[in-house]
Image 1 (cartoon, rainbow, N blue to C red):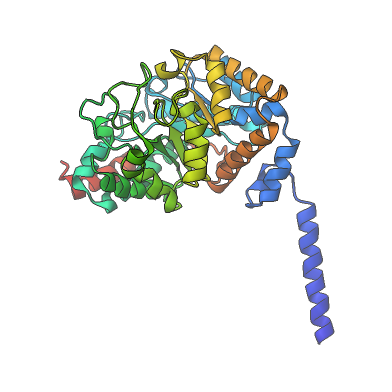
Image 2 (cartoon, helix red, strand yellow):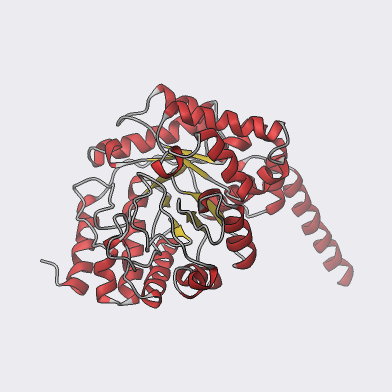
Amino acid sequence: MKGRYLIIIAIIVLLAFIIMTNSSPGWPNIQLGNDKAIADKIKKMTLAEKIGQLVIVGMEGVTINEDIKDLIVRQHVGGVILYKKNIINSTQLLALLNSLKETNAANTIPLFLAVDEEGGRISRLPDELIKLPTNQAVGEVNNPTFAYEIGRLLAAQLKAYGFNLNFAPVLDINSNPLNPVIGDRSYGSVPDIVSRLGLQNIRGMKEGGVIAVAKHFPGHGDTEVDSHVRLPVLNLDISRLDKFELVPFKNAIAAGNIDAIMIAHILLPKIDPQYPASLSKKIITDLLKERLNFKGLVVTDDLTMGAIVENYSLEEAAVQALKAGSDLLLVCHDVQGQFKVLEAIKEAVISGVIPEAQINKSVFKILKLKQRYKLTEQIITSVDVANLNKRTELLLQKYLKFE
């Protein structure tokens, strides 16, 4: 009997070995959660394919065009972000997202399909959907369950169309009434409230299957300048940041709840007098990665914003952001600039300015995140707007007495 059991075990082991050694080396293998499969895939990728994964681009128009086709098919960009200018209605949005997936079908790595959907005034989804409240309104209710359910509903809305990555929530603390860019996008002026509600919003999106990107590290709440226009300067030292601005980010990291963090375009001269946070090794690598022990994906805010392009060339900013420790770059506007960024990164790697080993580490994190959330290029045939709106009505009636 003992010998028979040994034979059965040996057969099972042999079958497992055959299955493993004959499995495809492509993207389906990565779905198994095998880190070695991801590493093996990266070894087979060209330099251009790896560099492409480091960039999310925006596009012009409401239908796919030759530029975005080129960026996806030949430049292998890691993702596409859509804005309100790209969206007319539910039918058009669904068709656009499906066409982006179809264009990427020849590649073996699914796209990040990204958007800024925070609720309130920062909303890109079609107008047929009932809008979710501002974070300020959620903060005034100050119920963690409400914040969680908002996150779940956001995920449901986004996944219904095919989005898989959301640049939200805002974890900035609204400490300056003169702030022109944060305001009601924040949960409030109290660090603990912002932290508690932000973490629940992240949990809701995460459990709903959408990647949440917390923003804007190390904190944009005390600025008086809009970084879309020019570079804000904050004369805050590390002691102040530790006690205030960093609290929501530190708590999210400690909870192991956050997969990605966006870096702000703000200059903190008491920490780095030379570079804004999004280009600063002292802030990205020394503070965020090493001191706060963040192991997730580091994403820049849009590099085509005024805070950057008024002070740097787009190519220079992209290379410096990677040197500083960023993993993923947002280049949301300027199609020619998008091509230039990809070429500049390639030249920086070839010349040794950026080690290819660093590129590989960032690509690994990107592929790992795409695998963890089971990103696919599956086509979605319809969106049940009425059902989404019913869910929104019920949620708002429950917490805001919505009519």
